[in-house]
Structure formats: structure tokens, C-alpha cells
Length: 212
Image (cartoon, rainbow, N blue to C red):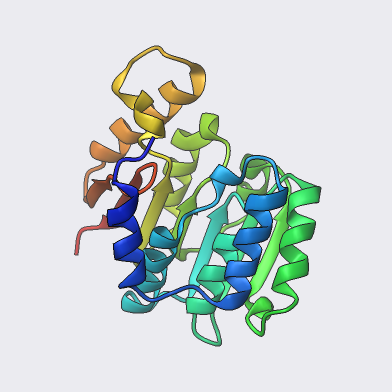
């Protein structure tokens, strides 16, 4: 489902900060060889993430859902030298691809991979993060949101991806994943003490931050 006409999105991408050659190689490889490549964030999202990380002075990131490591690489490149990203996934095959490409980047030292189910991994993480990116198993989105609000730094930002779910969120009771995303969106909207905006970029991006 294209929420924005392709030619308009292409124009926006062409007038935004572009991704690195290594990130492009990883994106192209994933799209050509790996099942489920629609899970990649797009170039428009990559530009937005880079902007938000640098504008917000982000240093610590928690990512749920590594896949082939494209978004991890994009965010690591935007972090300062003393920045860190912890990324969590359960797929040993796709994360091996991620590690292969990360190894070619001088920013790989900023990335730490945890290969465990998200809820298990989060149960053992007790620090705060400046940015928490939710892009893993959709059935756990409400749980991830609650954890994120409890582990967000004072000026931090939560980004939840796929929050329009190809438009399926307009229908209640469609399937378990859709209902979980709808619940996430409702709970995000009802958060007290937070400012939030749901953007129709790609498959929907929910931005959530504490009131100042």
C-alpha cells in the first residue's frame, strides 16, 4: 500500500540526506536476495531517522527488530563516536548478513546485537535510552510500548514502525497482528505526559516523546 505517490516520495528522497554506499549495498542485497525485504525501512525513513538522531543529540538507542541490519547501520552512522545501539532479533540467518555488512563500517563498534526473543531480552535490560525503535513482532507491540515508556530518557523518543499496517488498522477484529497494532496505537494516543504524532510515511511511523 503506497500512502504517498512513488514519484513524490522519490522527489523527497532526492532532496534529503542520502544513505551511505554501504547502506545502499545492504539495502539492494536484501531486496534482491532475502525473503520479506518489505520489512526494510525505506530511504525516506532512513533520512528521517538520521535527522532525528542528530537533531536530538541521541547517544543510546534500543532497536527491536534487526532483520538484515539496515536500520541499525543507518542509526549507527548518525550516532556520535561515543554512541551505542543495542539491537534485538531472533533470526540467526538474517543477523549474520547484518554482521557481515556492519563489519565493513567504521561505525560497527557502536552496534551490539542480542539474539533472543524481544520480551526475554528486555527483561534483562535496565538502562534508559534516548531513542527506542519498535519494529519487531507485531503481537508484542503493546508490551514493547509499555517497556519503552519506562526506559526512555527525559528527552528521548520512541519510534514505532508499521503502525498503519497497510491500512488494516482501520478495521477492528481483522486478525491478531492488526488488533495488536491497533491496541498499541490506542495506548500510545492515550499516554499521559507524552506528545505523540502518527505519520503516514511508508507503512506508518508513530513518534512519541515526553512532554517538556
